[in-house]
Amino acid sequence: MECAKFEEEMLAGKRTGELDAHLEGCAACREFFAAQRRLDRILEEALPRLALSPSFRPALRRRIESESRSRFLELVPDLLNVLGASALAAAAAWYLPQLRLLSQGLGVLALAVAIGLTGAGSLAVLLRLDTAQPDD
Amino acid sequence: MDQDIQQLLSERRYDEALEQLVDRYRHKVFRLAVAMLRDPGLAEETAQEVFLKIWRALPGYNGQASLSTWLYAIARNTCLSQIRYRRLRVTVTLEEPAARTASASQPDSGYLDVRRHMEELPEVQRQVLALFYLQEKSYDDVAALLDMPVGTVKSHLHRARRALADRLR
Image (cartoon, rainbow over all chains, first blue to last red; front, side, top):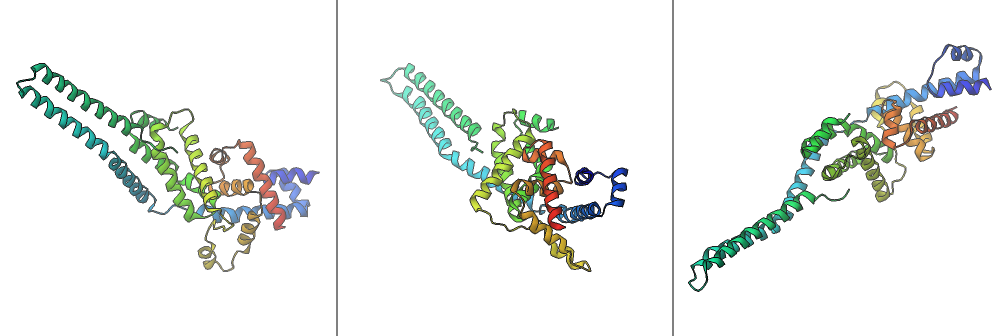
């Protein structure tokens, strides 16, 4: 009964005067205590020696840079779409007012469409950039 | 504790936040991976995967859980995925004892015995025991890493130590 109580203390790594006194007169507990200390020593010596290699951070940085690049490349088609639409709309806005058959108002309308398209396209790309975080 | 990182996140300075997280948590994540995967090489690879996932997920971090809790959950899940993926067999390499014992006058057979007996423990006890020694005997760290109450960690640890002591008698 008493040994069970001291075993708990030994397992918890406590060292009290009472425990020392008990160990003096109990061979079984002395053996158990010695086994615990041996176990402690073996595990303490063995496990903390593990460490990350010095290449951990550079390798992580490379992986992140590589992923950032590929994420940017994924956006290239969208960016080209925006640029293309903007160029087309700007060209129309410049060219249409030159035609005598069409009014100046049409040119202004085309310009407004050009600005709208460019703004919407840019917003779409920005939103995609912001939310393009893969799930965990 | 991670207020500075939270501040960086609120300013959307994700790369700097990640740098801080790597500085602060890389060893703990690595040790958790070692305890769960039993292979330091694979653990290091997995720790990289963990931080890559964290980098991807940082913009979506909503602050509901503390950063460490959130990070440890990602780390545990990544390790579990590795275990499922690789269907790890018992190949414990908790440490390379050769270098240590080579210089000693007597090889420490106790280490091999303990290692063998650790493998016979229930998985959770083995993980708690390994992590306890890897984390410099911090109950709090083990509890946080494994998402367990401290009392449960102590209980598993006591059972594991008792079982090992019995087997080594």
